[in-house]
Image 1 (spheres, rainbow, N blue to C red):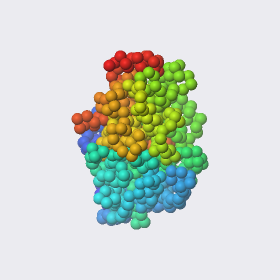
Image 2 (image 1 turned 90 degrees about the vertical axis):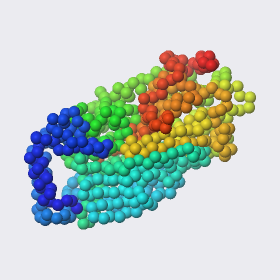
Image 3 (image 1 turned 90 degrees about the horizontal axis):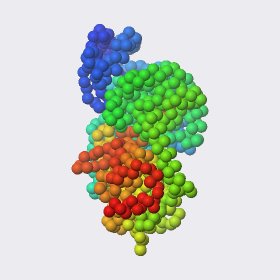
Image 4 (image 1 turned 30 degrees about the vertical axis):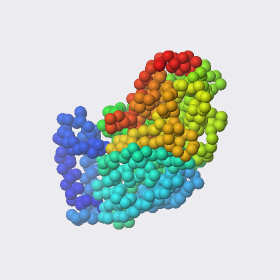
Length: 624
């Protein structure tokens, strides 16, 4: 149901007369600010790639636009709004939601003989419910109401709306975070308490939520069409994946034979996905490119910090656009790989899976010179040096909990996600000193440090080889040292902010009090960090730094301020980026992201000294 045909023809003819004289007004889609741009300003202005491409493609673009408009005129012939008639082919395929065992039939739609799969807007709720229940089985799924009105298909969750506008090709949320948030969670939720560890945490009354602005995803600048006719309302599957499923860390992969919706592919799902069919066409290449630019423009959380006005501009400026649009899927996938490792280089951004369409050997040959880019190579080298230093002192492996004189050392290299198979309320034993579960390790360490007659005066948390992990576990670790954990998170897409404050229970008496943590016990608390300390391994030292209760030793931590955001392309590449949930620390009521890392209070230049624990204990004792 598009706008009247005569208006379109006139608009197209006007566009032809203006090409080469003045660029059309452009808007910075992710930010929502509109800025008019003249031909003389395009080289220096944001959004100028749209004007540049318009001039470069003057003849073909203008002719195609008029041809399309005239074709619509032939169909309708009236000057009033009339439904556009599409040739929509329906095809039912199996869909696997988060696992090979969770299967349902899904109707896909293909418009005017195209290869891009669409789904009915009315089918989104069922898929979203299956994703939600897989992500949060203990949390009841919120109820969604679906309605249609003219050119709008709308989902309502109480006062919160998801509006598909089929005239303007937009997807709008009056409150993006509130529409999706889990029932038991905070607004920008990084610590969902939905496993058997929930009773270990108590949310403080000091926790706060600040609602964000309305969010509109404008598809039109990316040539992504929402399609409606007398029979239904259809949305590209890839767009639904990028805008809706990605909130819960899921992506939708289509391989010609089935649809797979998951955050990552296990071996069974990989086998199903690789058993695909379908050609790499010009239509698919262009749609995949446009959709990738669209989702990164809106959902890449470090766009401003990386000085990216738009991804089309970035890819044009780097010469990668032509490769993305290549008729060879291997070249296109290699272009995405180069974008991630050469031009983003933020370490959270990773290429995670190859399309079933691409030749793996040829792909590996192309990307071999790129490796993991400068940042990835530097981090790998740092990690190798630290591991070699640690192995020289602990050739049989470093203990997770160790006492050296009057100093306790707690060492773990990942914030291990909470497990439904572990009884977190059983009394800790020596087996919990393995470090295989971080929360059990912290419970064991507290038990040992606070035991009667304990000689411990100093406690060092060694995060020097910690690469990150689960944020809920990080909250538990922070609270163990600080008495309470404070995790501030901002949604860079909507502007919503959450300050999550929790206390914890470590002595398992069911109470949340001063007996549960190491704070206020007269202990000297330290954290050993390095450039390898990344993501949650960077967040925790940053929180310690802000608290002024823990002394940082070593070298500046490695940064990583955004939650991982799994995505895929319409062509089938799987990747992840730094998403729109950005970790921060709060100071004077303001949020400051932690991407720059935390500076140590006492710099240790020789990393061999990190693991000479006898020498390090002596050094610590001389600090006070």
